[in-house]
Amino acid sequence: MTAATASAARADDPLAIDVHGLVKSFDGKVVVDDFSLAIPEGKIFGFLGPNGSGKTTTLRMLCGLLTPDSGEGTCLGLDLRDEAPLIKRQTGYMTQKFSLYEDLTIKENLDFVARLYEMDRRTERVEESLKHLGLYARRDQQTGTLSGGWKQRLALAACTLHEPRLLLLDEPTAGVDPNARREFWDEIHALAETGITVLVSTHYMDEAERCHEIVYLAYGKLLAKGTIANIIDNTALYTWRANGKNADRLASKLRGCDGVEMAVAFGADLHVSGTDEAALEAAIAPYRHEEGIEWFRHKPTLEDVFIHLTAGSKDNFS
Figure (cartoon, rainbow, N blue to C red):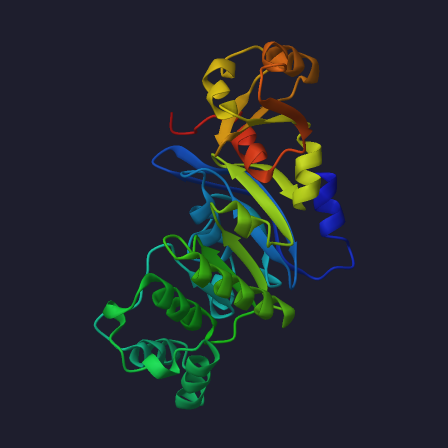
């Protein structure tokens, strides 16, 4: 683990997740390889990485749905292997694909979930959940007729109904409009304030920036963990930004040049990055004095780092 890991999970911090050396393979392909992670209680951790990197598999191991081939650890103080059924009872897992019954109403779906967990005061607690997440007025609406944002809200209600101590959310806001995403994240922070720990996978950089820390997994390997500031600083990536008339069109000219790891247009602006500062400056030098274009040293963004880390990783299925 990195120094950021150690600082985030000090010995005096109660840990919601503490796992070491997790490995999981399917059909001879290693999907998660020697994964270790420590997450303190009441924190929101973003889980980033390219598609096919083992994020979903890792989430399923953490909540007891999959048994690791090797490795060990605890989740909510319970052994990952021997006490998986108890972990499930105290964890809320929101899958990528909406998994509730579309031919039932909102209220009927939540009542079904409450029955699965054998909850007491079932009717009362379902009504409380409906009101808390703004679903009460729609309680008798058939679930299949809901928009993506309302389905997301219902899915969150379903996975928090049994008052879990840990939430595992797998790309919960994919395809949801910006306003619904913002409301969702406000609710996630409200839940964390009550002591619930949240691990959420996302491809949205603005969502990652709302997490206390992020974890970056690429093709089964844990590559980085810590605050966004720490990860950006530790990546040792240098970035120049160009703006002005046709600055974005320089991207095609710079890609492939010595010292340039990425040249990406952001609207009319251009970000050019690399890990060799001198080589990067040499690459952009011929374009530094083009009329109408200004160049600035620029702190790498999280997206710059994301692309850099992904480019340096090998797909374990290739």
